[in-house]
Picture 1 (cartoon, rainbow, N blue to C red):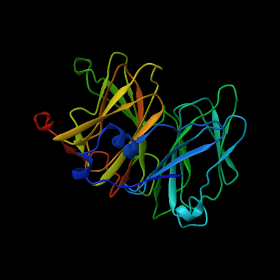
Picture 2 (picture 1 turned 135 degrees about the vertical axis):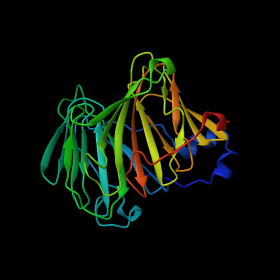
Picture 3 (picture 1 turned 120 degrees about the vertical axis):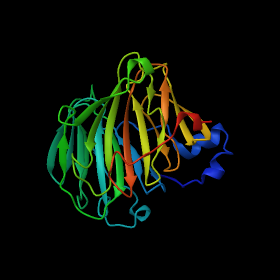
Picture 4 (picture 1 turned 45 degrees about the vertical axis):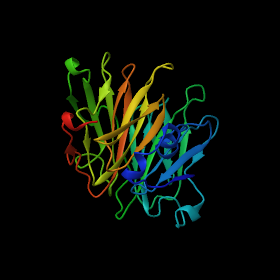
Length: 277
């Protein structure tokens, strides 16, 4: 598991492209038959991926990194499948996930295995894990069952649908919040006008991008913005003080995950467009 440290905004404004990518960009999430994990000190979130093809992938890590007896002893996990049909086995109970289905795995779960139903069309499980202080039951939701709503407009190139999976009114958690935003064809912008939420960090994972397409992910303080070029199935860490927005060379889908002081999706501080620099 790779470790990333928290950064101060006064320091980040001096970063060049390479340093920005070293600190915030996660280029590799899905390696066949392996687990990829990045621990960020931004609210101790773990971002990663499991890509079972020919064998099951187990949720495990050098336990010295977490100071516990097993991965979810003091943590919770959200997993969203962005590949072919798959199975997540939690302490012997199997949960089948089709593409864009979500599973919440509660604190105290001891064995978590990720599997594909067809090696020719393998599952890809995108993972977010946050520290937990209370146990909630493991539960699944599908894209059709998620709380969804339209946002934006074609006139502003941001006509999109937001699907909330793990949140106040959906799958219950200790602090983890996860969902997915799908941009409609011909739309490129997300989360603009921008906002920050100093009470929660956030991570984005961009996917459903054509091979040659990119997303310019915007970050930084509103008056000191920077960008990171993102490609298909890559993630980016957003500190609580940073905006998190993007514009693509085509439409795309992204998964957002948050951890922090609350689970209120609407708890954000809007940034007027005139304040962006």
